[in-house]
Image 1 (cartoon, one colour):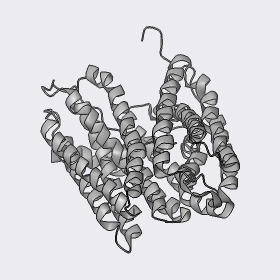
Image 2 (cartoon, one colour):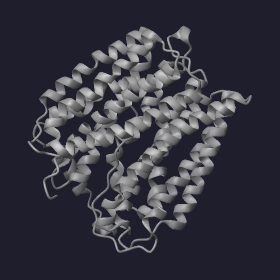
Image 3 (cartoon, helix red, strand yellow):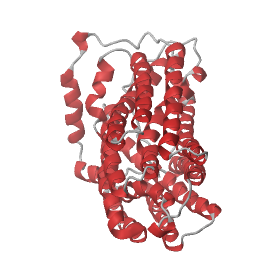
Image 4 (cartoon, helix red, strand yellow):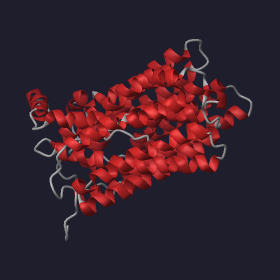
Length: 438
């Protein structure tokens, strides 16, 4: 169910070959890109749940943390125009490491919730800016054939960060708590480990990132802001824009609400309608098995689209995404006590989500087609994040009013707007299909 924002960067001329091989920095760069998003959007939810913050407050305030990814296109030109992308990457990684250390310092304080949220807010802006710089640097530092060869490496290590965050770090918090520490001390330990790791990553990239000649600041005379505004005007003049925006905002409408309550549901005690799992069990079932299933679903969804095209694959993928949400309703009704059964149910739901999300990503590629495809794709990702932020904000309050069983029933009804918008969009025949010989 977690799915990270998709970053963008401006196209660039081919880079000159670098003596520093891509294996020395591409895996670590995309691991560093994935981890802050996992911390801000997922670990924060579990941490606040352990620290006894209400579901209403968790969903409302952590949903606001999507905002930097919503408005990222508005300041992306700054990364393009000011400084080098290499400098942006290293500086922002040091900033993320410092922010993680600050979160650790806030947890024993009386107003830890407000203070840690403020730091997470800053970390979210740093992470969104890092996305822009990292993807831009990837295009500048690698030849075209290297870009194609390492696209799978990028995706894999981004997923490794997700599994490490939602699986390993959640397990670590549970282990530290079981050894006698309070939840505040346990999460302090997790954040301290993360902070140290990020400072090491920043130092590594300061040393190992290549220095392509094309990665240079734009001369002041060439900083044409009028072009930036024209790109936005071109996007909002696209035909059928109302349907496009409706689809981008509503396709994940049920998932946006479910996402914020999934881990609280797994952690809450039985008398509150939850499944009473420990942090270690959540880290295994949801953060490891679930994310592996999500990755496999995404790979299969991409393969299906490449074989038959998005138009033919659209409805099967949409249904694969939404129908498995019924497993949460079933678990809220039956309260299975078996970790194996819960893990299997979460794997089914995440596998379906991985399938369906590929259709959404490919539709954004279609919308972005044209002379400004990179910038327009970034605008699409902003609307994607907005579609996750707004429903997530009220989901905790709604669950508190309805209870888990009726809330998950509502999530199934909330698929209707998504299905309606899917019926309204138009996909060209063959779009996304790999042509013979290609």
